Length: 409
Image 1: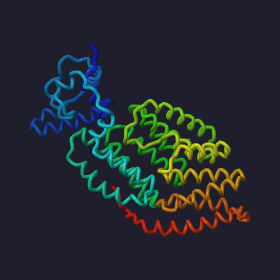
Image 2 (image 1 turned 45 degrees about the vertical axis):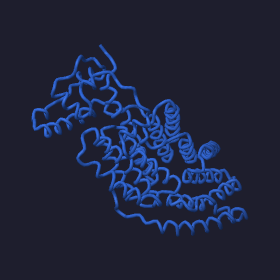
Image 3 (image 1 turned 30 degrees about the vertical axis):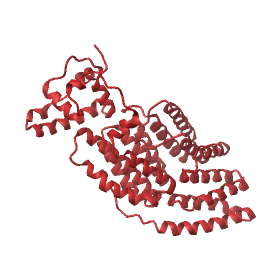
Image 4 (image 1 turned 45 degrees about the horizontal axis):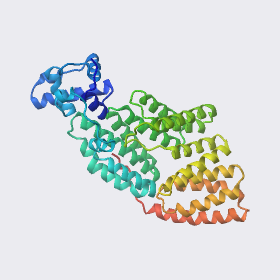
């Protein structure tokens, strides 16, 4: 007879709902218990697929055999009688997440500082946090706690990769992303590694490797098929794939992937999003869509999406707004709407001076190149002069932001 149980509830809360992932953690827990109890027989405990299905369906009377219960209690942290009894009322989602991870507040704080100030201002602080608070927590943990610790290490190490990239250290960034992917794979939840591959795809595209970006996005989507649905992450991966295809000139495929991203993001409105998943909202999708359509030379639509992204982004997202303004200006220049592009660029220059982001500096240089053919216009000349002043200020700013080469986790 099927019924709801605490076992199923705990398994889902701890993201061990895939049979293969659960078995991996169960085997590790069995070996730990065998050492703790000095009972070698416990290390041979296994879970069959049929037993797993019965446990998940609540189709079990009483509890499993004693050795199995001992491992389950070590793995899940509750008595077997409780695990195979009725479920508990679920606490608020925020409390669930914080109970599972001591690092969620740190993730939110680093994300906020990165968005407002740029990676150059925050990178060294994140590195210190990774070394002193995160990597030390990977040692000597049980199976479940280890899975959560590896997940947090993956998320924060990927964040360090983005900050290194934002600071102009792409080789260092690549090392962080590879470490993050290893942590993600060790976490046992395919969506954690998929989250990292979304970032790796974006980084590959920034480095001019569109084919590699497509493959990384495709790999992330493949991983998600083996995990509980995370529509917001699927939307981001489809968007990354669309951007890479657009950069390669595959217009039809890029637009199909962009539509898939829109469909997934619409589904995300009714789905819970784990706090560790990299944020991806309507403004982010509009920004990516603008870049995709600009690469495909579908210019009026690119302008519409860029304007939409800016309307959805508030002033606290300084870097995102700056990148959106650059895309909008480039789209307007491509349509010979140079006066409008100058107005956007003027607003951009007023707000981006203090952003510690090499990426912004590079994109500003590209925007300057796009404006220079129109330098005979007085308005364009004034903007170019302003860009020269801002570039000088930004060089001094970025020179003061030291990033430790080769410092990877």
